[in-house]
Image (tube, rainbow, N blue to C red; front, side, top):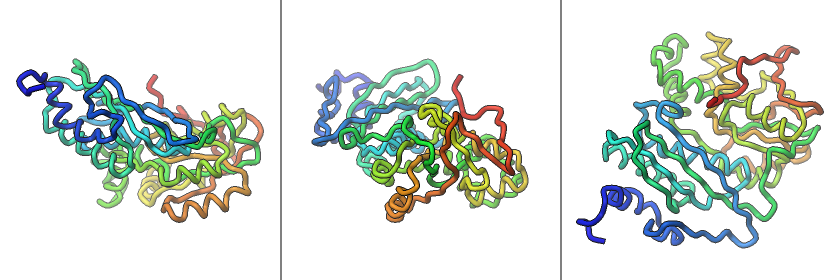
Length: 331
């Protein structure tokens, strides 16, 4: 097709997204669908998540980080299922006012993580919208047949592990909305920057996916807050969790915030956007998981146990904390 007969949408796709679609099954984005073949003996794991301006990101956020965050949210789901990324589809809704430079930076961010996580673009859709910018991704991963780690298989007696640190992103979005909080929280520049970066660009734990698959009895990614997501896992597994709040891993910056504003512990535990993994496993599996995690650089913290009952109880000083809302919710 000559340039003279190409639509503006075709030119946009050709300029910014076709270079990202190098997988042979993407057919150069020249067809109506893509085709992929799972590795021999593997199941496909499918997940979908997206971002909307004003809901998942703020108007001033860098386009590059928005693209990368949209993909990483889905990669985090695959990691918690023990899956290796295979590829993704992108649906992008853009208002007329969006500049071509914004699109270029967004696509550039995707390009970086396509290479970093070996997760190619396979296809998608591009639309005009009268509303805010929205980017939705459907991602695909592979696990050995029957090997996907579910949230419904935790057992009483399991230990509860969480990766990384919790609550930084929830504080980071507050800082993005009100930079004056850094002074009130007595944060230095490095601390404030670290919290903001955790909000802008999560670090999905895909390096730990195989270890999760080999050792965990149940797992899910922490996207809506540790308290709420662990509660979902417990509900699906028909068990309860008893968590020691003092053992929940927090960054130096988060500890500094809590020192002056202790009530923000609820924000840390329920605010969301952590993109860590919470998992359960039999005590005998813990040494193997820790050994596997050493080579990944991903920190693991034991925060509690699975017991009989229902729901997740976050204990401090012998009493369960009561939350106004245990998890982020769109409704």
